[in-house]
Image (cartoon, rainbow, N blue to C red):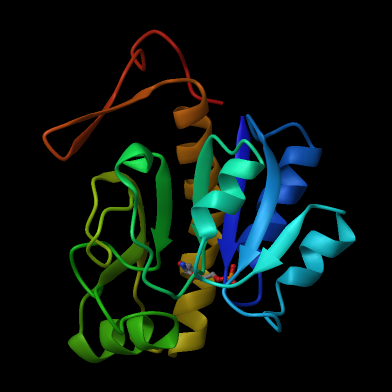
Length: 199
Ligand code: GRF
């Protein structure tokens, strides 16, 4: 499966996917990368791995299609992306909270974890979801929880959540690649899971 990755930040998620693909732990490979602007730090991982890349936030889908991408993965992408109808349920995002809490426009990065801590909730986590045309809103694929400790700073909590992201995103991508995800009425059903263990 050919994966197009969209980035706006450090590229840790991109790097994780590149490494897992190299280790044959990802059912696909990173085919191309788009950054929303030219100086996005994570672009260095695309360069190092000699993965075709570009920057800009217009005409993203024509670029992805020119690289025959099957699945688009938002990896810290911060621009609103309008999803063309034929890409419905073929674009995934990961958000560093348990959607529908602490998400939506303006809720990204440290803002999320600061809001979580300020609220006093005991549990946070990450959510992988398909992207629709509302912020952090599409059908939820996977969630992994983490405990919020009294002494947590937003940086400490962010690091704990990111450790879970490193498992959640590849797992969701692999399930997609194996045809195990089915979206029915905004609900993602896992097909075949009773008989086919995930790896
Ligand atoms: C993570 O918080 C993720 O949940 C969000 O972007 C952050 C990762 O960005 N979507 P990066 O991979 O470090 O650039």
